[in-house]
Length: 238
Image (cartoon, rainbow, N blue to C red; front, side):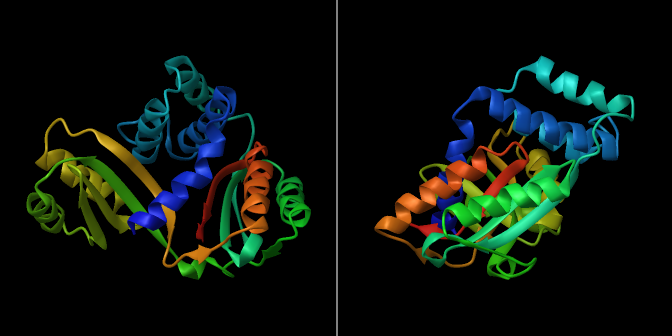
């Protein structure tokens, strides 16, 4: 899983090209979390997790507060999640998660990214069955047995655990995300999560080479230029 997780990080590196784009993506996610589950992070675990992710990406406090305040009024944009799947250059599998206030526009924009790079957008479920929807928590620790014991005692279904260079990375089903994070926080006071995400982790890789690599980079650039695109997951291996 370590290699699969690294592939995911490669795909998202493009979204950090400009701070404004990163702030915008987090602000939209914060707004949606606050509007759907309430503006109090103590009572809205999804919002609390999103705030933590925003802070980790160095999103300023005023951006976070503005997004949450915007949700208090109950008005504003009505964003909804949209997920698209398909095959990228070299036949690699791709999942694209979006937040949109206009599904027809977003679908057209995403489809254009596929078309311009001679790729094929598919129907829902065409590739997602080849990915695990996983919660991933990474932190500094060397006692793998103690970590595993804490998770198992909390009835967390650990699917994998990695211990490398003083850092432990835990993989669990996305449904166990909050339970796993709470168990680790209780067992290891002061823990700081270097990785704190829910994402699609590929079960296998699709090697690409030659011209397909350049086309894949173009494909990612086109997707990451779209404001509605929040995350891109793939199984491409260079």
